[in-house]
Image (tube, rainbow, N blue to C red):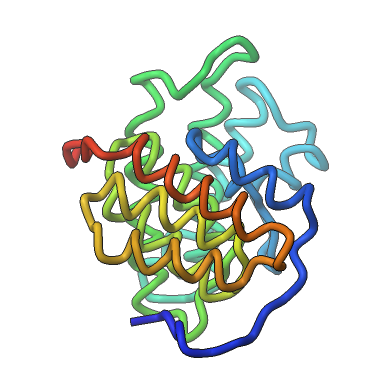
Length: 216
């Protein structure tokens, strides 16, 4: 288990960062894309991304990277995960609250390559894990989202990331991990924020008491 509840290590967590945990019911806190791989959303801006032309560039990039990704190249795998996710997000509109059905194939492919990436990565990229949380939330696979949330919590080791793990463990029906994550979140919070963090953890557990069915 990734928890060490006996430890007394505490890092100061800024109040604004903790308040963002309230938004994690939609998984938005975990949204973040970065890393050392070319391609993805940043390149879409550089290359005039957006629209059909932008999608064509991303699709060509996927085709270029797939051979290396299928051979287990870590950098290529990261790029393909991000690019499939980008193709999915390009199908959403500014007024939408989720992904359309037409984007589900791209989301599933992003999830497939994330799983392959995990098999070769010695230390998984937490920014890619944030993206994986978005992917699995969109295709209703809370257990896989929980796995990605654990990577984020292990890397960030702060109250907010463990609150995220509370959320996804609860949705996955993993009460033991949710309870341990809640204790860890409180342990890591500064003294002035402990009651607030405990309340947030309790709210997240209550909001997700009905586990979602595995989908996709």
